[in-house]
Image: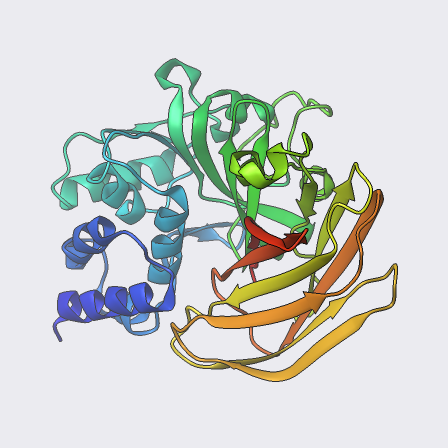
Length: 388
């Protein structure tokens, strides 16, 4: 059985499904001699079932796996790797994702506290023919400041919070990817955190199941700065002014900029109902008379998804609903809603609810608001992240 050819076919499917967005990673990963690391049975599970495989087992509480191929594709895509990157990997995953990243960027630092796991990982590098990688044996939650700042940080095990000391080791516009434990150890979501000059941009890429990150002690907890799930929820609710608006001449003549807040999605336990809210804040009377909302829904999966979509204004009771929308694979679907409600000084909220029996994968939705004033039409864009 030609496992390498089958693996390359699998990676091509990942691109079609939206998991993998970097052709360089496809080439590097697809050409790794995996047969040097994995047995035939492991290769069958890893490639044919697209599943994780064990590389270390001591007892039920001491288990390590090589991440499933689709998760390797997803994590490397979320990192948005560049050839000049300085990457910090916290926790070992057996050598495959580490080796892949090392061939795509300038510098990689790996931190693993478990000595046996670190040794197995270094042996894997030798088997793969990679000589410039080694593992720092220390607590991964402390990072490794002396090799920073890092443009990308990958945390490979589930953690309850992100110490702010790791954010400090991230450069401006740098990206940290981590699976965070929600309200139960087996209920986790994987987040992409982008460090900006004055704030953090946080994107939720949906539910995952990772083993816990191995560490023997927690860093000193900073309640004001450490990133917890509750703080992420609060950050999502914080008001954000869309920078795109500042480029629009239409609003300059009024000397004000409307503020638009797009909350991230509110998840339910069943992952079947999703809600998004756009909050308009106006500072002058009757600036906007009419609004047309366009939402482009995209299904990156290889099979169709059927959804229902609803728009609702809690302040006026106006409701519009479309049932039975069929999202074909790889084809954007444009939804249009007309809002015939004057926006006066104050707030105006619109709720977007999407009901689907199947989750989207890495789906993004862009909303285009058309603003009408004195028969002059202008538009501005607001990105809304849908992770369903």
